Length: 60
Image (cartoon, rainbow, N blue to C red; front, side):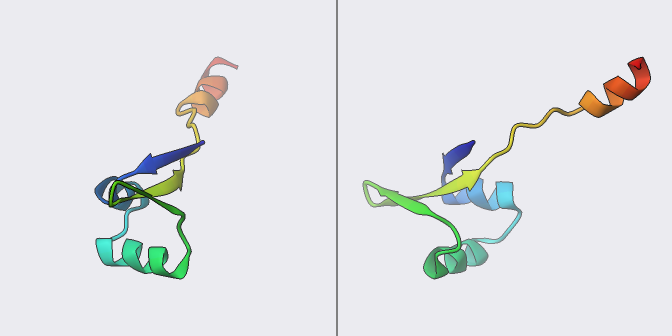
């Protein structure tokens, strides 16, 4: 699933600095969308099933 994030949210999620995010934007490594003069970043967010494997091992 893809989410549209602000620069601050994208940096936190991707664990990179603002300059890295900006470089990725300039090089086309990350897809962006401008909304009213503000840049948003498309980020792939995979759903997590935390504990699923552990639950199977403990219960199975």
